[in-house]
Amino acid sequence: MASVKEFHRRSIEDRESFWREQAALVHWHKPFSRVLDYSRPPFAKWFVGGETNLCHNALDRHLAERGDQAALVYVSTEVNEERSYTYRELHAEVQRAAAMMQSLGVKKGDRVVIYMPMIPEACFAMLACARIGAIHSVVFGGFAAASLAARIDDARPKLMLTADGGSRMGKVVLYKALVDEALRLAKHPPEKVLIYRRGLDPNMPAAAGRDVDWKALAARHEGAQVPCAWLESNEPSYILYTSGTTGQPKGVQRDVGGYAVALAASMKHIFCGGPGETMFTTSDIGWVVGHSYIVYAPLIAGMTTILYEGVPIRPDAGIWWKIVQDRRVNVMFSAPTAIRVLKKQDPAYLKKYDLSSLRHLFLAGEPLDEPTHVWISQALDKPVIDHYWQTETGWPILSAMPGVEKTPIKFGSPSFPVFGYDLQLLREVDAEPAAANEKAVVAIVPPLPPGCMSTVWGDDARFVKTYFSTFSKMQVYSTFDWGIRDAEGYYFILGRTDDVINVAGHRLGTREIEEAVSMHPNIAECAVVGVQDALKGQMPLAFAVAKDGSKLATPQGRAQLEKEVMETVDKQLGAIARPRTVHFVTLLPKTRSGKTLRRAIQALAEGRDPGDLTTIEDPGALEQIRNALKEKAAA
Ligand code: PRX
Image (cartoon, rainbow, N blue to C red; front, side, top):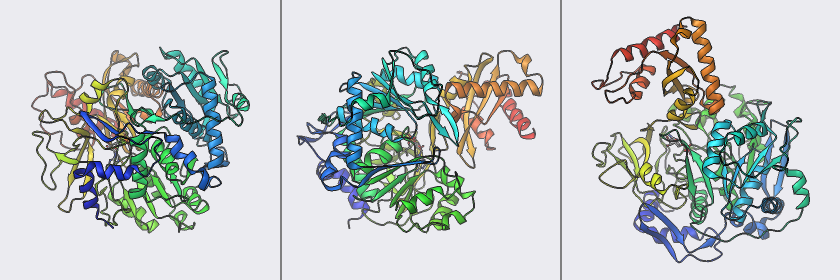
C-alpha cells in the first residue's frame, strides 16, 4: 500500500501519468489524445479528444456481468413503498425515459430542468439526459417558485420534469403547483412539462398543450432502445446551481470524462466501495452529494445505490440503521446535522440492528463538531470519516483515504488533501503560505483536478472573477473557506470567508436571503447573518429596517411583521432559508463608505467581541443591534 502522502505527491508532480492511470477505471469509446490541456488558464480540459458517456459507464458497461444485480433500491418511509431495479431493469427504464424526452424534442446540448422528489423517476431522468447528451439541472425540491424561476431563466430548458407532489414528514408537498407558479414568473419557460403523477395531488391542474403525463407517454415507449451519445470528455454533463456572495445563484457546469474518472477514483481510494457492494447516501438528488454519491459514483462502480425518501427519525430513529442491516450496506454517507439529530434520540436504536456489513460512515457538507464525531464513532464502533468538499469540486478535497492507506482519524478534522488537489493555505493579506496552526484561506493551485467545475454556465468571465481573483499576486482557486493545518499535516475547516452560510448542510447566500426579506413591501433594508446553532450548525438571523416604523410600536405589531417577513422568505426562497428571528432596528451598522458590517453583527449575535470598529459610520447602530438581541432574548 502506498502512503497517502506519496499518492498525493505523485498526483501533483506526475499529474499526467497519475490521471492516465485513473482514467482506466472508466470506459472510453474513443481514447483521449491528451490527458490535460491547460493552454487557457484557469480553464482546464481533461482527457481531451476522448469520447465517453456517463450513462454508459453507469449502466451499459455492467450489463454483461451484473445485469441481475440490484442497481437502484428505492425506500420511501413517506409513502411506504420499496422498489428495486436491477441493472438490466434500470437500463430499460433509462432508455425509455430517454425516448420520452426525445419525443418531446430534447436533443444533445438542450437543458432539462428536473424538479422532482426523491423517486426513481428522477434518477431515470438524470441518467437519460446523460445518455443522450442533454444537460440536466436538478433543482432541490425545497426551493420556492421564485428561486426555481431564476434557475429556469438562467438555464433556459427545453423541457421540465416534475411530479404532482412529494411528501415530507407525511405531509404532501405540491410540486406541480409550485412549478406552475415558477413558470408564470419565468421569462423563458420551457415548451413542455413532463409530470409523474404519484396520486399525491388528485386535483392537480394540467395546462393543455404544455403538460404531458409521464405514465401515458411511458406506455408509448415501452422497450425503447436509445443508444448512448458519445461525448467529447469536456462537453457539459450538467448544471447545478449554488449560492455565493451575490444574490444570483451560479450555475456550476460539469464535464463528462473528468467527472466519470474523478468519481471512479474517489470510490476506489476514498469511499472503498466495490462492484456488487451497496452504498447508502442520505442526501437529496437536488444537492451535489446526491448527484455524485447517490446517482453517478455508485453506479459507475457497479454498486447498488439506495435512494431514500424520508427523514432519519420516521417511523423512528432506527430507520437508517434498519436499512443498513436489511440492505447489507457497506458504505454510508451522511451529514453532521443528521447525526446531531440522531444523537438526541434513544441510543438504543443504534444497538438494535446488525451493522456488521458497514465499513465506514462518511460525513460532509458542514463542519463536524468534535463531540458529534466522537459520539457517532463510539456508537457505531467504525471509522467515521469527515471529508470536505464543495458543489464546485463535485468530489472530496480533503479526506482520509482508507483505500490508499489507513491513517488515524483526528476528531474534528477532515484529514489530508485528496489526490489531484494542490492545496495551499494562504494568508489573506499577502497570499503567502501560512505556518502550522495559522488560520488562512484554503486555496487550490490550478489546474483544478478532473471532475471539478469547468466554468459558470454561460459566463466564463464570472468563473474567473469569482473563484480566481481573491489574490492579486497569483491566480489560485479560492474555496472561500478558512482552514488551518496542524503540525502533523491534518487540516481543520473553520468556516467561510464570504457571506455564505450553511444551514443543516444546505448552502445559502446571506445576500439571497436579504433580497428575499426586502421583497416585503414594508422593509427598507436589512442585513442577514449566520449564527451558530447547536443542531443545524448555523441559522440565519435578519436585522431589518421598516419603511413605516409606526407598525412596530407594539410587540404585536413587531410579531406580525416578523411573521410576514418569514412568509416572504418562504415564498421567495423556501422554508430552508427562513430566518430564525427577525430583529427590527432603525439603522444598520455601516462603514463610512456604506458597506454593512455583517461580521460585527454576527459577532454580537454570537456573543463575541465585534472587533475593530474604527470604520463605523454611526456607533449607535451597533447599540441598536445589541438592544434588539437583548429584547428578543428576554421575550
Ligand atoms: O464551507 C464548506 C462546507 O460546505 C461548503 C460547500 O457546500 P456545498 O457546495 O453545499 O457542497 C457540499 C459538498 C459536501 C464548503 O465550502 N463544508 C463542506 N464539507 C465540510 C464543510 N465544512 C467543514 N467540514 C466539512 N467536512
